[in-house]
Amino acid sequence: MSLIQQITEMYTPLLNVENLNVEFRNHAGKSIHAVRDVSFSLGQERLGIVGESGSGKSTVGRSILSLIPTSAKIKANKIALNGVDLLKLSELEMRQFRGNKISMIMQDPKHALNPVMRVGDQIAEAFRLHNRIGRAKAKQKVLDILNDVQIRDPERVFRAYPHELSGGMGQRVMIAMMLIPGPDLLIADEPTSALDVTVQMQILAIIDDLVRDKGMGLIFISHDLNLMASFCDRILIMYAGRIVEECRASELSQAKHPYTKGLLACLPTVENSDQKLTTLNRDPAWLE
Image (cartoon, rainbow, N blue to C red):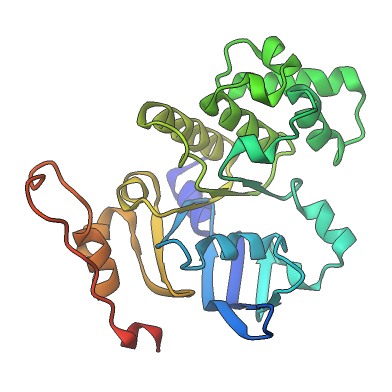
């Protein structure tokens, strides 16, 4: 494939989200707007969504998969994957998209994996759900994907239970489970937040290699600005449910919105380790 073809495919919209709004109602019946007027597109690239806790970034990812509580309401002009508007699908049809076309890596594998089911059986179940295949072939497929995520002893891990795995190993298993159906879009919600720095970089390298090799689109959700700048192609910065700025990851340090500038100024540096950290001064105008 030529360089021009690669660039064209990278930026051909795989996912289109237009005017997404998500509203929750609390026990008192009061409406809480978690996401407001969010629009973006995604090609075969690594798109980062960054913001503070409660900014709405995880809700955006879950809304694409319709994985939000029944108390919430999703409204949007369109949420389209490869031209198919997901908002128009029935729950049964949406189940065929989850895992098969869109996969999501959750934050903590210890909570996402079934504690009383062997790891290999869980991964095989994710594959057999969308493919008519025998147990023997499904097992070989699982062993292959475990090898792809750089697990040294796939047979042992296949037979293990989640509690027998380390944090890094558990996260690799989650990646394997989400990638085995061959989705077009991968949503990674803080996939390395519970890992130490060394294991974190290993997991990111695995995700990067697999996404590039399989020609997938990636939405990477995090609150780590430095990680976003080094790992993603583009970044969306969210505040109070809105996208306040979009920029190329390589140009994050030249961000223009005062909120993004404030977040960057709050980051500690080795050079200024003896100085007090800057606090973020919020402007009510950011909510308008």
